[in-house]
Image 1 (tube, each protein chain N blue to C red):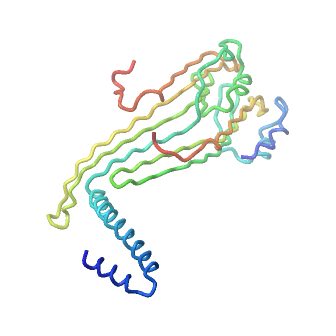
Image 2: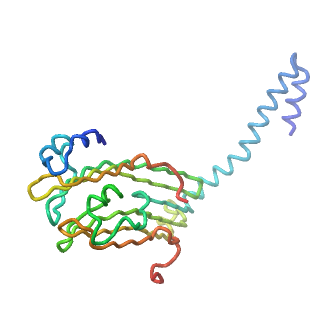
Image 3: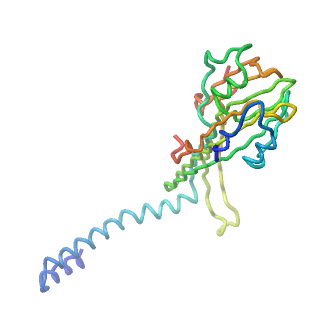
Length: 95
Length: 171
């Protein structure tokens, strides 16, 4: 997920249209009590499967990068939060 | 044994007995590996169709930290929270409040099955299987007023509970 566009954002000034121009279409739009939230997300899943004759082991690890923009009722950016966790996704055993 | 003895005799009678014996040792080692490995592979192939045991774990999300002193009901803002914890896993509006949910999910599944694949002989097969799964969650739920001030904090750490512990006895 490209977070380079975050430097161009100014809380209280940037509009929802400008955010969409920088980051594209959001994956989800959530109606909040005092505006809207635009959610951008990207997930990475790594699966491991081992077959040992009669025993089989499986492990599935899914992590996500998320940027959430909060807008007021006038579609002006008020806050945003960033979580970048896809690099934590790993192969492994189910123990 | 006779064939191996004859091979040895042929080696000693050959033009280069040392090289011949090295070849004999290599083939002997391969033969021993096959003698050991083949029954194991064969048993696995047969048993694999009769008995199987599966263990699967699914993880989603990173560690959820317990609420810290920086999260103060009535004073902490949404901006402070996002700077401290990053983007939440989920968010929604709930009865006029904004709910931010930070969550980690660990799901464990186990399955054991025993069967007799007699379909070709009897036209039916016998199979008994037992399976179980359990999903545990670490959850930090933060409720905000429409003014985006923290109103309530709820934290539950569930992933440390053992897989076998029945949910009915949990408090």
